Amino acid sequence: MSKGIFKGNDCYFVPPNNKYGLNSGDIVNLTLNDFSFVTRIEINADEMQKIWNENQQVEYAIINKNGQHCGISITKAFNDDFKGFHAKGTIWTHDGSGGHKSIEILSKTIFATSDDDNIIDIGFSYSKDKKYITLFYNNTFEKKYFTETIVDYTNSYTWIGTSNPLDDCPPPFRNFFYGEMHFGGIYESCLEQEEFESIFNDIETIDNKHKPVCVFDFKKQTPYKVLDISFNGNSIIKYDRELYNF
Figure 1 (tube, helix red, strand yellow):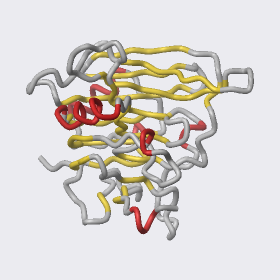
Figure 2: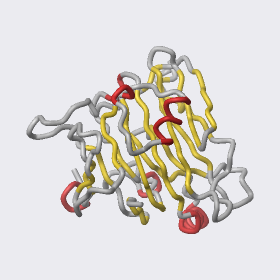
Figure 3: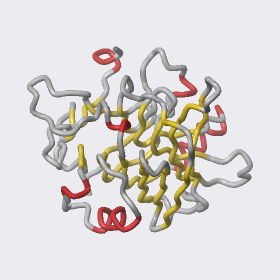
């Protein structure tokens, strides 16, 4: 199976627009309405544990909007005394007092505690009107309601394999992922459990009712980009620090 390999300094981003106007979907304004992220990953537990031991890094980002990081990540809970990682879904909101607060779901299951549970299917969704987020992981589904308003991510980039690789982001918050990605997708809808299951049960089929913005499986790629197999023109771009440290 084709896959993207992430070694702690590899990442991609979704371009905010196409210079020829050939893309569909609105990645810039994605978080102003319902949205979802999905991914199938394989965790490199040894490398992630090594970084944790050295730096107490708390996040390894999978698909994220940067700033007050929003999306899917892998993390260790502070009270974990064993090797193993949680899946996590997060948004940030205004707290009503001029500050901000995170709304997050941490998986109850611990992954990567053996060689047999390193591959994880993760889905994360946000409902604007009903004000909830969901986290789907290996056929488990959780939902969390909130009352606050999501922060503005329209000036944020959408990153694959990091929260933010740019020089103006302090290294402890860049949150590079270690492992492999078999599949990923970004959708302009709030996916529910049955829809996550449908996607992961047949990742070869792109169902337009889910409103995909971009979907990628790394089967067709160049050294610089990976094809958007939803054919919306939003192929993800390999980040090159010298070219794209904007």
